[in-house]
Length: 235
Image (cartoon, rainbow, N blue to C red; front, side):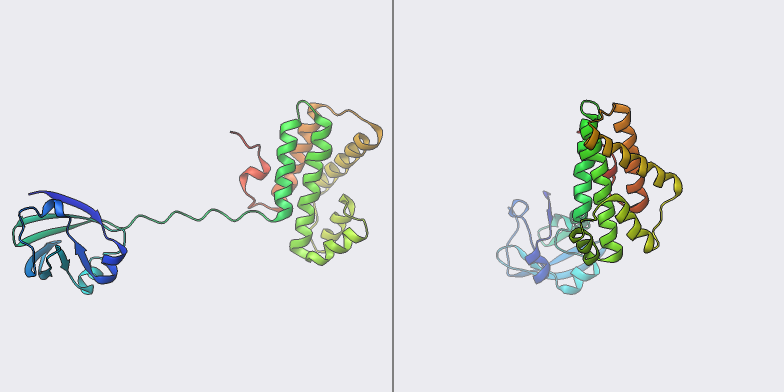
């Protein structure tokens, strides 16, 4: 006897019936009539119509967990008996993509990518526009998360969106950095200022160190942050 495999459709689940594929019904007399159904060692009587639709009932579907997408195998044992084998549950729906990071963390990610890209050939740009800006964006996001958007708006109006002011606000909210990281941030700020105001030409080593400091701060403030924000994205 021919065998057919299929998945339960939404209409079949809703109506508690199964459409038998015509390819295995060539020598089978259509309904309306009653046939025997053998499934998982149990036998019931069901009604089949002229289109080879067999009505099994909601209890049959519920007991065997037949839902949309469930895989089944069918085979006629004889002209009056149909075997149905439940092969497996419906496929799991695709997982939803993770939500995008908050806006300032998205900007931090973009700056970190820039820093990674330019560290070798243009280390000064990697520091000024990459690692240092990423740090500022991460601190701004932390201020928003802890103290609210209005606090950041006020700092912006006062022209105080710089490293010291952001760290001061967070410290007052109970978020203080250890002495080592704070010293590294101060050193990085001085390096960035020398690049901007004195035309200092940083080295590749300077840029790599700046990236390390930025990654340490990000990992500290956002330990659950997506991996690609603090690590180089590789194709």
